[in-house]
Image (tube, rainbow, N blue to C red):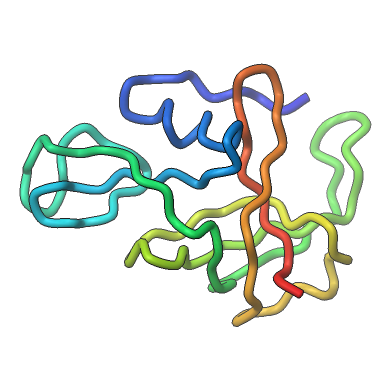
Length: 131
């Protein structure tokens, strides 16, 4: 069982964009700064014209780990978690599970694309290798 995030005005777009197959990142309309985790006020210019925008949903593995410990009953191991630099969102890195690839195949510099796993109304981003 995966805990579900609480939906708030600032994060709802991020957690529900997967329903349309979109990775939505908060961005300031005043200074074009990409903001993650999402916030209502831009940390760069303090502007409040923050809106979520779709990005291509691709990126490059910055770091990763392979987990061998089943932290909850029934958890399948091993699995990889990757920290991915998101394309067209400078400074934004999203950590998520890598799917559709053996955990040992994940490497720094690898190209990834976002896919989504739905639980209730939440669409968790996951990463899969770009072939």
